[in-house]
Length: 292
Image (cartoon, rainbow, N blue to C red; front, side, top):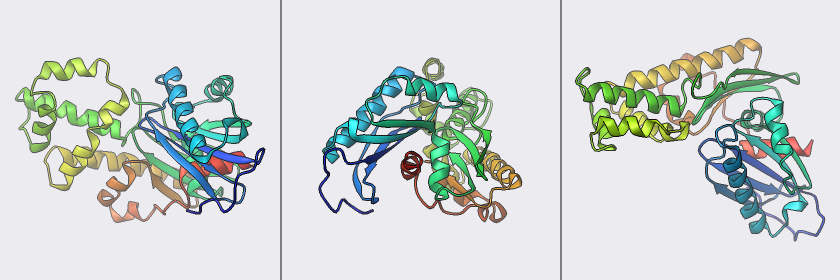
């Protein structure tokens, strides 16, 4: 990644990309020649789950990035890609929040990820993070697959993987299924108290369930009898999204997200070969979006 080659001048046009997801928020500033001036990272920023809290995290992350670069927010032309922007109304709500940028464009986190993955060209992405979704950009048109949220969708996501594992852990604790090292480890998080699991679930968000997904992936790698079918179901679900994107005409597809790389070794070869490495990350996709 290139660094700035010359001093920033007052009033110089600078570009900020923000990727606000269900697990973390990241920001990056680049100069017009592509030099990276600063980066920063903050907490979860899903505007659908907590609008005010997400905006606070986004602005704190953006301000930290601007401080590192030594520039005011008012000098930045910003592109936001945010979890929870499922329709234009959500984007308009962020636009109406009066954020102090020179210019602001708001889209979904999947849109900026797809722009970055294919260098602004046609292509599709399968997102496997806290949530899951598919998106194809084909001749200027968008085709969305999934992305319906944790309650009704997100197959193959970290949240769904974590929830499935906790369900199995409760079944094992009740003696309905044989326990495994995974279910023992999960129940140990709650002092082997099933009531504590249920009480925790009353307020748990998707990111809370997703925190258990790495345990499930590790257990599946070790051959755990409960973890393995959960991961294989996730792979099946994500593979179905990839095949649908291909059928829609996406010329290349990338698997992205915090769990994408971890799940890739579980894919059968006929599915794994569908995925090509992203050309750039979502932050650079957001910056490319606002530069247009």
